[in-house]
Amino acid sequence: MENISGITITEHQDSKRIIDIRIEDEILDKLIFPFNKFDITALEYKPFTRFTIAKSLDDLTSNKLSKLLNSIIRNRDTGCFIIGLKNITSKINDTFLVKLSTAIAYLIGNPNHDAMAGKYYARFFVKHEDKSDSYLRKAYTNMDLHTDGTYVKEITDWLLMTKIEEQNVQGGETAMLHLDDWEHCEDLFNDPVGRKNFIWSSPKSKKIEYKIEHPVFTTDNKGKPNISYIDQFPEPKNMEQGIFLQRLSDGLEESKNQKIFKLPAGSSLIANNHFWLHGRKAFKENIDLSRELLRIRGSFFRSI
Image 1 (tube, rainbow, N blue to C red):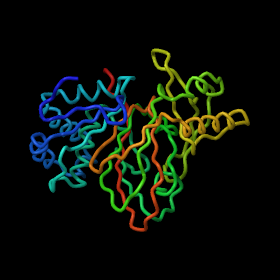
Image 2: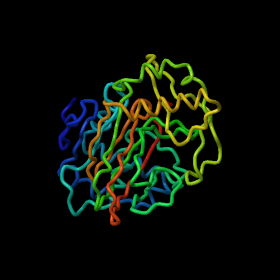
Image 3: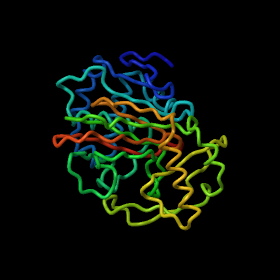
Image 4: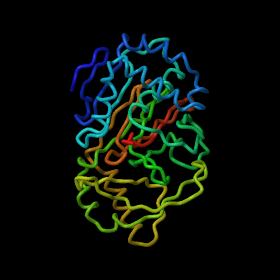
């Protein structure tokens, strides 16, 4: 990979497929001014401002960062990177992290409208008590391996998750699995049930009124498997589909090739949503547990 001034690029300690990118102070200091030009409301109401801050970030790397990020996220051999600041300082607050996450996302593609939040991104808390209708906010339950966007009509090529802050937590590690490392992939991919349409819906909190149909497995342009799956949202039509989904779930959760690690606060994880599955381990119970996350997901830029 090409060296970029002001950016440290290494392989993640747990996986050669995941690239670790750290933004150094020389870039951070120069980002403060262009980021201050727009408040969060401007970014939410005027989509072109998001491209402006993305360009500001890219310009500080002589437009090399966007090329790097796209070369990683679109490459089947990698398809995932973690990006954050080499040094967290008092200049870094939640507003800055929203802007940085936005800039990174808009170097890769167009975010989908997040119906749950009514914006191009969603911010949400995970706390000790939870009354939600999905696993997203349930701190003490595993969030099993899955992909995003299974229940929406929009294409979901990638997702970005930023850990804005975290307090009084133990456990809750990020879990990742690349399809090409999954020891049960060939068996499940070759089962014809996985190529048939399943019905996918979502709970009320997602604010999606419709249901859609699509298979669990498809293929990319080289014939390799892609997956679109989450355990909570398919509606099996028959015993055949129900048992297939159980085999799929068991095979994913029992995989010895999951990568399990802590994502540092202030960092963003960006993954190709077609061949990377992601999840989260349960936290240890603590009445003072608090964490805030930001999510953006969308499609790659395509030639006009």
